[in-house]
Length: 328
Ligand code: CP
Ligand code: NVA
Image (tube, rainbow, N blue to C red; front, top):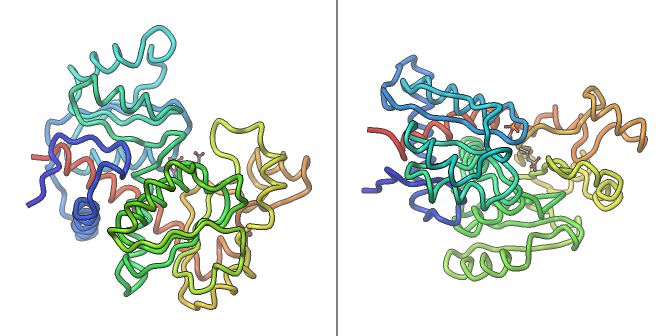
């Protein structure tokens, strides 16, 4: 059988489709176990550390609760020397001697790779500028729970900034699993051409279909409409430009209707700009006169939305990743 013990989880590129399905099945088992109130000890006596250079609600809490549920101890390391007085390499060498696993969220993909190379323990990518692989596991789990189709016959349309970590990671998952992936975005925000070429190559083997388009009509037949913020963490000076480029691709009721699929589901990794009730949301309204960005409040809270199930599934899938790579 499959054995992921000792492996890092840095990008889905490193995982075969069988390994991805293994993690999804394990997550479903762990979810059932938690629902029936059975407490676990799969991570008993393990110590894990969480490093966040960027903000987080879901990812941080998922790692903590997942670890606690299975008996591990967690350090949420804030205010470390990393990046200020100490290099990533030296930090990795130190943490690897204390901990059984390391979660990292930050800017550079290179940094999470260095942590993995130098620490000698499994490292989990909790989001970088390039990828957000644990998020995609939760997305795939949510799709599986909400359709009777198998993943390789799902059409997923990603509308918005397809060049960000989510666009990249969903493209990789689709190519690996033989899904139909549509990046619905202005050409300047299509995924990196190198990544596209690599995934097109893979798609030949997996029967995946990858489409990059500016044509809204391509949503027809979608099983999943996915979007993410137009401005990712670290890009906060790009609001004006992104709103201009992306307003046409907002996920609103009209776009949902254009799928002509009554069973279509809406997913979003969250957090999302669907209202003006946040500090940034109210600033956006003042400056640009819009209350909603990548998704309207109606769709976000509407009958097709599965965003909170998806958020819950972050915990179950992250638990699967930790258990598979560290568990006994
Ligand atoms: N989706 C996600 O990663 O959420 P957080 O930024 O809150 O962790
Ligand atoms: N693309 C977003 C995802 C947040 C979970 C960001 O990087 O900010």
